Amino acid sequence: MMNESKNTMPDSQTIINANEVSLLELVIIVAKRKKLISIITLAAAIVSAVISLSMPNLYKSNVKLLPPQQAQSGAAALLSQLGGVAGMAAGAAGLKNPNDLYVAMLKSRTIADQLIAQFDLKRVYDLEEQEKARKKLENNTVITSGKDGLITIEVEDKNQLLVARLANAYVTELLQLTRVLAVTEASQRRMFFERQLELSKDKLAAAEVTLKGALDSHGVISVDSESRAIVETVARLRAQASAKEIELNSMRAFVTTNNPRFKLVEEELASLRLELSKLENGRSDDANGSAKSGEKQNGFANIKLLRDLKYHQMLYELLAKQFEAARLDEAKDSSVIQVLDPAIDPEKKFKPLRALIVVISSVFAFLAAIVYVLIAEFRRRLLLSSKGAEQWRELMAQFRFR
Image 1 (tube, rainbow, N blue to C red):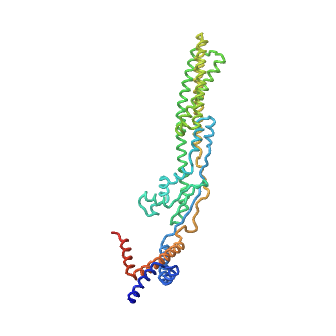
Image 2 (image 1 turned 180 degrees about the vertical axis):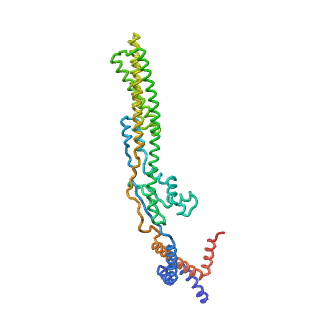
Image 3 (image 1 turned 90 degrees about the vertical axis):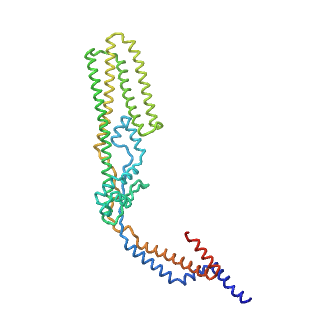
C-alpha cells in the first residue's frame, strides 16, 4: 500500500508542476534553450539581410505648389462695375476649393497619359497595357493638399534620376492643362458675347432705321422737356431691368433661390419693374389726354422710337463691356500656380531601410523562438502524465479542420 501511494505521487506532482510555472522557471527554461533561440534569431537576421539586399533601392522626390488664391480676376473686376454677372461669378468662385480642383487635375487620366508617353513609362515599368502603366504611376505617386494650403507631389521610383524629372513634369503638365482649360472657357464666353453683341447691333441698327423713317415722314417735332425726360428715364429703367434679368438667369445656374444675393437681385428687379410700370402707365394716360393734335401725337411717337433706340444702345454698351472682359480673360495667362519647392534629384535612397528590416526581423524571430521553447516545454511536462497526454490529444483534435 505504501508503494502504491508513492507511485501515485509523481503524477500529481507533475500535473501541479505543469500547471503552475513561476517566472523564474520561465527564465530557466529560456536559458536552457538559449542556443536554439540564438540560432533561430541569427538565421532570421541572415535571411532578412539577404532579402533586404536583394530589394532594389527606391528614391523619392517631391515638389510643393502654391495654388492660386481665391481672388477676383481683372476682368471680373471690370464686370463688377456693371453690378451684374461679375458679382455672381465672384460669389460662385468662392464656393469651390481650388486645391481640391488642382489635386483632381493632377490625378486625371489626361496628365497620366502625357507622362507615360513623355517618359516611356511602359518600357520603364516593363508593362504593355496603358491601364497597368497608369495604375503603376498612380501607386508610385502621392498627391496631397495640406492644411497649410500647399499641394505636395511625391514620386518614388527605382531610377534615381527619374523621380525629380517626373515630379516636375507633373507641374508642367498641370500648367499646360490649366492654360488650355482657361482659354477654352474664356473663348466660349467671348464667342457667346460676340453673338449677343451682333444680335444687339442688328436690333440697334433696326431701331435707328425706324427712327430715321419716322423723322423723314413727320420731321423733327418739338416735345416738352418733361415728356422727353420721362421717356429717357423709362429707357434707362428698361435697360437696368433687362440687366437684372440677365443676372438672375445667370445666378440660377450657380445658386438656389434662397441665396441672399439672389433674393436681393430679385427684389431690385421687382422695384425697377414697379417704377417702370408707374412711369409707363401714368404717362400714357397723360399723353392721350394732352395729345389733341396730330402733330403732338407724332412727336410722342418719335420720342418713343428714340426711347427704344436708347434702350438698344444701353444693352449694346453692356454687352460690349462684357465682350471686352471676355477678350481680356482669353488673352491673359490664367495660370498663376507657383512652384514653392521644385523637385531635385534625391541624394539618398528612400527605402528599403535594410538595417531596420534586419532589426525588426531579428526581434520577431527572438520572441517567436522564446514562445516556441515555452510551448515545447509545457507540452513535454503535460505529456508526463496520462491525464495531461489525454488533454493534449483533445486540444490537438480541436484544432483540426474536419
